[in-house]
Image 1 (cartoon, rainbow, N blue to C red):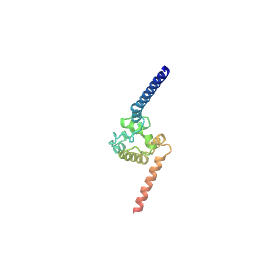
Image 2 (image 1 turned 120 degrees about the horizontal axis):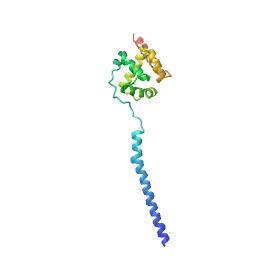
Image 3 (image 1 turned 180 degrees about the vertical axis):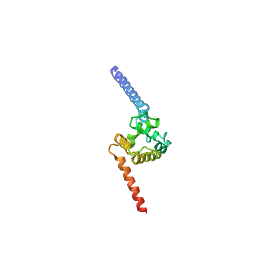
Length: 156
């Protein structure tokens, strides 16, 4: 009879231990692992808009600023905070076709690329070698420019 009681008690003890082990694991997963993954494991859906109000036309019209930004992007000069952010985001923006860009960032990027290709082709070539070696952005810009010219010609 003693063996049966001992067996019954150990079975209950084992069941209780098993239950608390499972509850502990559930707690760890629910309150520690999942929040950490949510916080740090997912990418943000857009780039920071902190620098969206930077006047891109002022930079393009000021030789000193323009040379400083180009030098930053080519690792020849120190970078301003917005230059660092731009430099950090360029590879992803090019790869994802600027899918995380705000409308203002997309507008500024298009203006910058257009300006560089049309007015600073030597600097554009250096930037392109570093950030877009397959030339896809130049091709996209030139196709867009050709289509815009064709649409203007057709409307005349």
